[in-house]
Length: 120
Image (cartoon, rainbow, N blue to C red; front, top):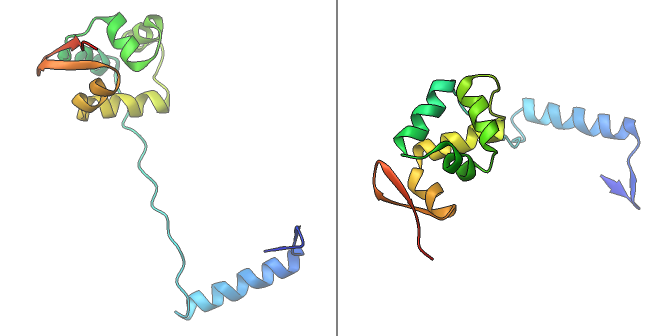
C-alpha cells in the first residue's frame, strides 16, 4: 500500500478494494474475519455487594483488590456510580476465576468462602 513512504492515490485504493470485493463475491478470495469478545455483563449494585461478601472481604480490601478507592467501591455498591467497562470485566473475571485473580493480587484462599493475605 505504501510506495516510497507515500500512500497510493485514492482512486488506486478504491479500484483495488472494488476488485477485491468482486473476487470475494465470485468465491475467488477469502476475507479475514475477526470475532470480537462480548462486552462484560452489567453489574447491579447488589451484585457488587454480594460478590464482596461471598469473598469475605471488607470494602477496603475489596477496593484494594480491584485497584479502586474505597469511595469508588462504595458508590458502586450504593448505585450512585457505575463501574467502567474495564472494572466490569475485572468484576466478571473475579466472579468466575476467583482463585486466579486472588493469586495475582497476592491473596490466597484457605477456604472457598474466605480470603486471606498470602505470606511472602
